[in-house]
Length: 227
Image 1 (tube, one colour):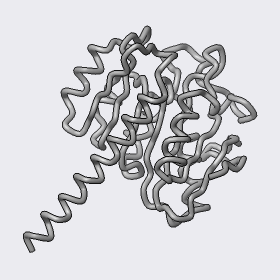
Image 2: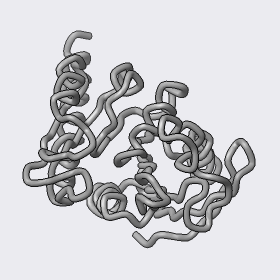
Image 3: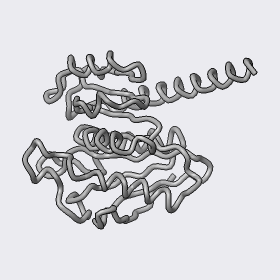
Image 4: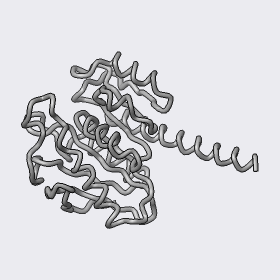
């Protein structure tokens, strides 16, 4: 499916640029969040964001929306990465909300929303998920930032961590994963925070989503057999 360039407005009136690929045969969608912009170089053309788009849209058939968050590319506003590092990711929640509203307004038939995010995008996504826990059914987080916001999530989570991550202690993510029954942790071997093999992401996502679908079908079948 071909991506179309779009713009949308956040709840706090910031115009953002993005790209959407719409599948009129699916009621599922994925919203994709990029890593830190500015000196870190993150934007909607990041290689992990590209991988997410290819996996969710071209392999699995989801409608996808990726976008540049405020202060990135041609998107208006100011990125939180211009603030103290402790505040990074604190102002972009309305950007995620704007993306959700864009899909709901233009494609009301979509019923399932999956959040896909990488690095700082995972922190932004976890903050949004905690404040709006009724929107996304599941989340796929690559190089996720460990925090109470991540630990408190109750939706199914796929965590893809780099074996040699320079920024995020793997042991901490292992503890987070062990504390959550709805979480699965994949460790990408021979990878670091900035170089994670897209093929590992692809295989992990496809297998995990297929497993969730099988579990849901089994639950439905068992429920029906008890009637």
